[in-house]
Image (tube, rainbow, N blue to C red):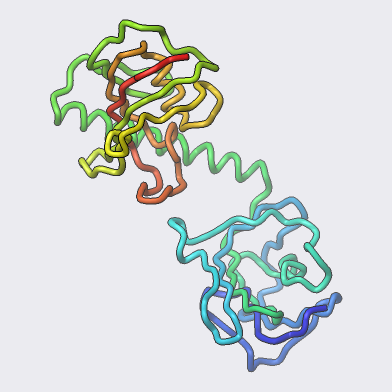
Length: 262
């Protein structure tokens, strides 16, 4: 087993308990409960645990933390610990809403915010997705009205598109290799990136999930040489996950040109 150099806290992030009386799991991991509520709901194998987390070294410097994530939490599927004596070995003891400190090589600060089985998680994600779809639809409608865009069409998935220059070449099809020039902006006009600034169109294979779903769908509506504006709802872009400068649940605006179809 690893030498216990510093403490690992499964607790409200930032909380430590290195000076409190410690207990030990059957696999030899020392721990201290911060609340000690043993009556609450506990996670079983296969459950999904939503938790706050931070890893600190012996100097108490943060090595990794969910505070750096957009949602400030992460999810962990309960499974046998990766090795005997790991801090995950003690998660099954922790009640929902409670926190505990495990003492190991590094200090992990974690608070269990929610425990769900797979079915409950999928239902929650589906409900959240439906609500976000309504939010996105209103944002797009407001954008179209504000900018007085005409001839904007909408697909069943919620993708909005405007053909600004019909193409005269080959229709893009699934499995074609296409090259696309694009400019990406947010609905408030913030420029994110542009292939034209790089001086080279972006190549990919259509319909192979190499790009966001809004692109696979939108580019397939175009012919070689055509130009269009794609207004992509978050569900067809990066969804609840942030991606670089793109915030979570962002509706994205692409001005695209289908340069080549092979």
